[in-house]
Image 1 (cartoon, rainbow, N blue to C red):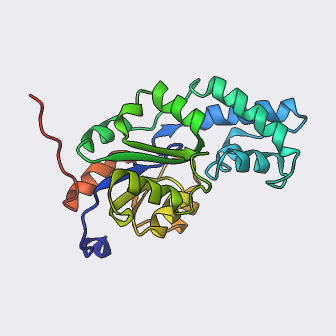
Image 2 (spheres, rainbow, N blue to C red):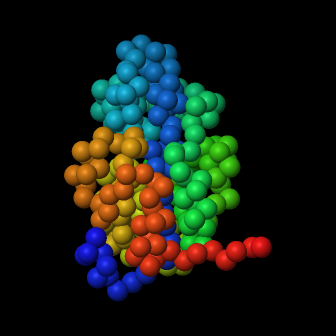
Length: 234
């Protein structure tokens, strides 16, 4: 933390990962994967195992679940079945992670964005279905750009659209993809424990700050003097 306090800049926007950071989608994802696996003759997988495969995009998830190479044509029909089923059932059990509503309210004076490797269609379904869409000025999802996190392109694009420098962003997420993406553009990185990623993988990615829950984020930013309070409306 001391190293962070030496930075001569003030973060101007906060960017969030989606799955495991803003929303708990693990059961709906696992159900959709197992539906697709069964439909194409593959053995189903325990939901707890499938959760560990999330983070690098939907096709990687299916490739890993089938134990096939990413570019294997045999992944195509399974991926298609997964995508169709998940789009139809993306909100069966998915809910905001603990303290997300409070945190986003506390941070409403700052520009907020979402940077996710989840496909655009299901990203919009989840954000809209949970009443979160209007809270974010920019949303970058899989399919919007030629590269996904941990490549820096998504964050560079968000910074450009918000009119800030990438190094002025705070990247918040539960996985190493988020931390590495943020580090690649010089942004501050905040790791949130308790999401979809195995704790050791998040810790080993060495975020600038590691928090136990999303609810701790506003106080952390405030303690650094970074949180601009929104004006009262009454």
